[in-house]
Image 1 (cartoon, rainbow, N blue to C red):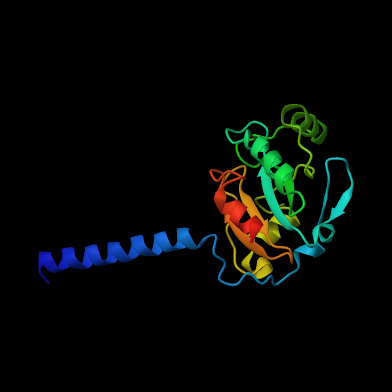
Image 2 (cartoon, rainbow, N blue to C red):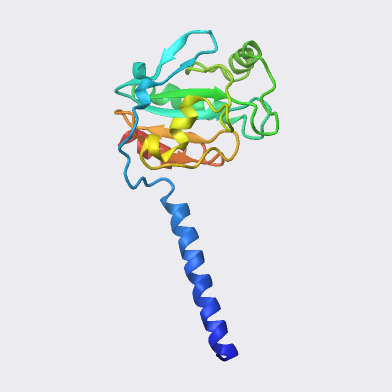
Length: 194
């Protein structure tokens, strides 16, 4: 086999690898089958106030779930989240889940988190007690969000603080967005309006 033929095969393989990676990145927010295998509405979490809240109480609205932290470069997104909630609270619930899983950027207690959110951003959307979103002690909500056999299509966990998962009015996961996507971006607004 000549050098020219080897270069041609290498370029061809490289082309297919790049296409495959690009299509996977594009397809992240286009579920192949968004029908949940397990019901999101069977889950619950403890609010910052100490109340156990069933996810079934959010039936009939879209749900945006965000892992939040108070000492992160993305922390100002709290403002975007609150603005989105003020604008669309008749259509969507925003659920904030503080986590200290990325470089210890949420070191506060639940009381400190509550004070921080209220004082700095006037947060009125539901906030929950600090949880684990990675590892063996991962909260059941994040197990559901990141296991294809539970949610129907997604197996990717949060890459950092302020990842966003959106569910439709029937509790099906319909989108996942990284921390760079602002909560009030057109991609998220489109999913809320549809």
